[in-house]
Structures are given as structure tokens and as C-alpha cells.
Image (cartoon, rainbow, N blue to C red):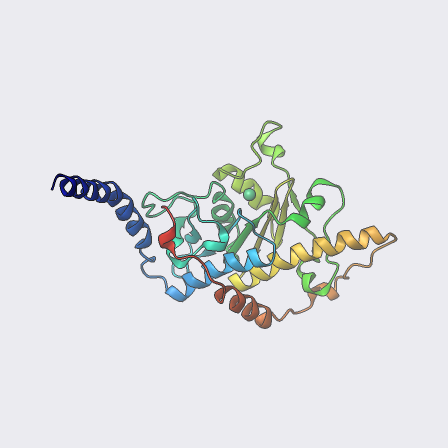
Length: 277
Ligand code: MN
């Protein structure tokens, strides 16, 4: 009898201890989808994170955003915290104003470099999607005097040149390498100017496009171009880059987009219940 009483108490105590965890997990799972935004759009944005992981552009860092489809003064991007790019789902997408304040934070962690996105959307009304990554093949071109140039047709969009953002210009020698304020985001957006890509010295790049599809395509082929250019350099001798005419080539993107999306959507991703908020 006494034994039963003890085991009963044990069960009650255990439930009591686990309950807050269960409630917290349930709250994280039920984070509502953004009101007024088509779920297909949120799902596609979430998938684009995984596409960039598959293509070696994102690792555990980096982020993708789109301008809000109904409100040009807002943008949509995933939360931060323990949610690495490969595991982003539609429920992780949050809304921000162009100063990169979360509209409804719900206690979630935010990416410290969200200012990259907000400030580019402010300066570039033609831009509807932004990728920030630590795309590894571009790093050598940000830290040397060798410019990244269009070396093959899929990267024709690099034909007008690729500027480099030097964080020391504004933040000095003692900087933290991160674009974690509006002022730094604005300096980066100015360095980008009218280009599709800006390299970030010793850090990565920011890539933009008029649509998510175009920004993802450019982010991937910027990485590929950088890798190919380095290989061509190692072969020695002058390199023949795309000329101005060749760089104006129209690029079809339907096949790549559908293939990348299909591959990403067919991958198994652990359910959000296995996560902590
Ligand atoms: Mn970064």
C-alpha cells in the first residue's frame, strides 16, 4: 500500500516536472502561420533555405528573405535560435519592418544580421528577395585584389562586376565582422548599389533578385562561378571572361528551380516537436 502511494506520488511529480516542457513544445509547434500570407509562399521560402544547404551555399548560418507580397514595407524571414537553415519550416517564418524589427516576436530568437535584408529593401525597390550566406568559394575574392567576374554563362549576371563591402570602412579595425545594426546594413546596401551581388570581406556575400527564384539561382551560381574562377586561375595564363554582350544573356531558370524545390521537398526533415523553442 505504502509502495503504491510512493509510486503514485512519483508519477504525479514526474508529470508536474514534464508539463512545462510539454506546454512549451506545444507553443513552439503551434506558432501560427503569418496571417494574410499564402501558406504556399511561406513553404517556398522555407524550402529555399534547404535548397541553399543542398547546394553548399548555406551551412548552419545564413538566411533568406522575401519582401512581403502585400506590403512593400515589410519582409519575411525565418527566426533564429536552434533552427538551422536545413530545418526551417513555414511556421518559422516571421514578419519584419524595414528597420528589421519583428512585428510579432512571440519570444523567438532573431538573426543578428537581419539588418542586411531590411536596409537592402529600403534602398532597392526592385529587390524582392535577399540571400545572406557564408558561401565559401567567394571568400578569396573578398580578401584579395582579384575581382570576382563572370566566367561562365550561368553566372552572366556577374558581368557588371561584383563590389566588395569592407566593414572596417565604417566600423573601424575593432569591429565584430557582423552586419548587426541598421547603420551597418545601410553601408552594405550602399556598397551593393545597383548590383545583384556584394561580397563581404572575410565573411560571405549578399545576393538579391526581383524574385525568390532569381535570388536563389544567383546565390548558387555565384558560389559555382567563384569556384570555377579559382580553378581557371590555377591553370595559369589569361582567362577569357564573358564579354558585355554575353553577359546580357537571358537565363531560363524554371528547370533548376523545379529540380531544387523537388529535391528539397522530398527530403525528410525532423518534425518541430523534437525541437525546443
Ligand atoms: Mn553572416
